[in-house]
Length: 245
Image (cartoon, helix red, strand yellow):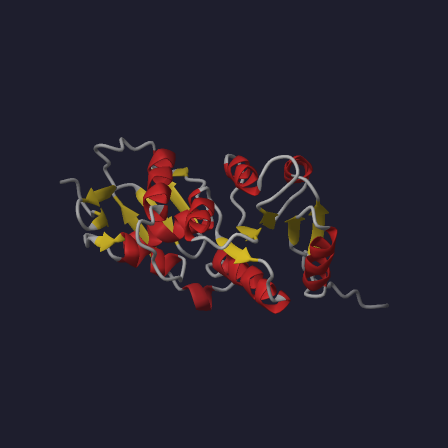
């Protein structure tokens, strides 16, 4: 009798590449395909959003300059319902444009022309960020868990719940909440949060953290003026308190 062997199949991650310059889209597609990813390319924002609605997307690379709707608008539209990582691709290099993209929910930003190896590294970095707390790797994630007055953060499962109801946080939003949990009852600056979560140097007049905190509060149903969890410490930054005060 022949033995039956069961083989596990690894599902390819699907990356959406949105760029109306065919040469760039093809270059990115070749680079990512060679790394084992499935790639979907679109030349317009509307076609891209249609693909997001019809297909399972694990990460998106969005060009800012598109023929119909710009990449910033597309990013904002995607963030209304989807939480996979988004990397902006653009020839613009100003700090204001970068901050704008991050404020709209982008997770990273790459300027053109770019080194293909750097792009691949950035993509892999985003996937590590999403999966670093994968329950299939308990030796890496440990048993880190927080329950702060009904706000539960399960690091191993990368889940956040409020009074038993799951919060649909983006990877960046989850990391902000986790950072505050790890510094419970301590006031931390926006600069500390930004550099810990994004891993980049903080820029003055950068309101990226405040925009993300506002979005987290909104998802928690918090009163912005009297939040129960993430408190604003005027002149310093934010604090997650272990008890009502």
